Amino acid sequence: MIFKKIPSVWTSRAIFRNYYSVSPQPVPPLAQTLERYLRSLEPLLPPDELTHTHKMVLQFGKEGGLGIRLQEGLENRVRHSKNWISDWWVHWAYLESRQPLAVHSNPAMSLPKRDFSDWRGQLVFASKLIAGVLDFKAKIDSGRMPVEYMRGHPLCMELFPHLFSSCRIPGPKHDHVVHHGRSRRGPAHITVVRNYQFFQLDVYNSDGTPLTESQIHGQLVRIRSQSWKTDKEPMGILTSEHRHTWGQAYNRLLRDKLNKESVRLIEKGVFTLCLDSPVMRISDEKYSSRMAAQILHGGGTYSNSGNRWFDKTLQFVVGEDGSWGLLYEQATAEGPPIASLLDHILKFCKKTDRRRAPLIPLPMPKKLYFCIDPEIKRDIEMAKQNLDILINDLDINCFNFQRFGKEFAKQLNLSPNSLIQVALQLAYQRVHGELCAACDIASLRMFRGGRTDYIRSPTNQSLKFVLAFDDPQVSREAKVELLREATEAHTQLTEQALLGQGIDRHLLGLKLQAIEEGLSVPRMFMDTAYGLATHWKLRTGQVPSNTDSVMCFGPLVPDGYAVCYNPQSDHVHFSITAFNCCEETNAEKLAVTLENTLCDLQELLEPSV
Image (cartoon, rainbow, N blue to C red; front, top):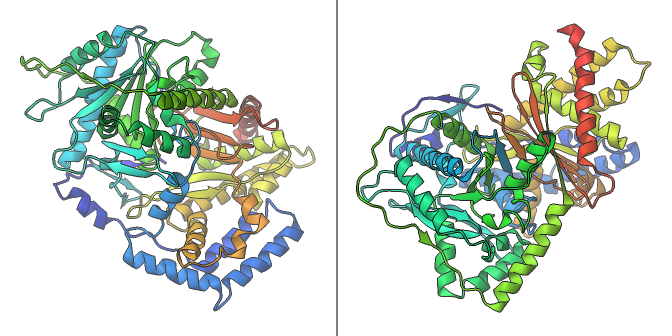
């Protein structure tokens, strides 16, 4: 979803005004959600299971039943909270998860390769990037950030300030996020990591103005001169651990005063810059997959994984070979604010910095030190082993489909996103012989404090199309009509989700409301059908970007895939991930099948253009 920016000069009360210019998120009608839930199960379940689930859902939603009581509880939350579901969603989906952030949670954005191939070019570009991020932050802080609109409606902008000086903190049962930028004088430094060594780099002059690009460059050169040694312990590896394990190590680490000071400086930094060492050269065909992997997890403990602090909300990665990208922690924000930030950086990189650097000399960047006792050393070694196992288990395949892009679909009056979603279901069916639980993502920023909802891609219409497409007895005209019906069904589900009428956040809210009231989890949510329909074997997401970027993240389930795509006017970038430990899934096989499927759809539709 591409969001339109309309200039709207913000004052110091801009976020407050924007907060009240967007509507509160509605709670969908209970009967509507239950009806749509049952319909979403039809392409996935056999008739006998559907009959069983239908009875259970009717019992839940009947007059005077448990569903009515829980619905009233949710409607009461609307009156007494900023957003009735967002806090619950963030806690349930992110903060309570005990999976490692690396691969399983943090998305990576790999950007087009820059025109440099050595450390000198790396530092020049990194200086420009830092200045661009600070310029974006200044727009937010001063109220000059344009409000984003979609279909004439203002979008909630409250997540933008939270991108900076924020960090996730591990806990025994759940994590929490701290925002250090809320005070009038927030942190004035970023952290830079090179060869596993962290540095505090102040990025503002004493008068509060940001450093010029030449000042930043001079400081990065100083950092490089202080980080030659490659035998340092990779402290950042600890943040890649299982959250409970990292939470225990975190408490041990912070018992030491020096460690606590260093960790706090990393957490408070405006963002983190990772200056990666060169990686082994690879063929052009596999370059995009390798670079996406480098941004996502650092390539392993013998590569650049020690140059990450996975808890940090924003981490920019710049390699010596011209590769660069962004890794972000999504408990704070999902994709759209990140895409806005990247668009701003790319535009900023085309400008020349004409500011003169002050003649006042800058202090040396501060190196952050850690006291590593035998316990911490064991924690690091265990984290290294576990991360390498995870990285070796992840299969990443990125490719650029060049036969057509979103303009092709638009010429046919089809939604580009819906066409790709139907293609994904056909490709999955060709590989696995069935449809599976699959989710697309819809932004809920049209509402106050809104985050996301799922769009359940499999529909009765897509099932009919998938079953008919490879049947030679079905005419071309019939297939075209079935394809149009399938894409229209997905477009309709997208519309419903964008308007706050999706089903998944509502169902989650009903379940959590029961827990909140001290009740047993309703039987409907213990049903086999609910488990199967939320075992997302196909996790998908469209990258809301105007650039040739590639997003990637790991699958939601061990036997699933994650597919990200970025449709441009005449081509589409794809990334597909799967786990090697699952014999049934294969990222390369799905990628090849998807590419062939898209070609087949083009041949089917082309006579209509």
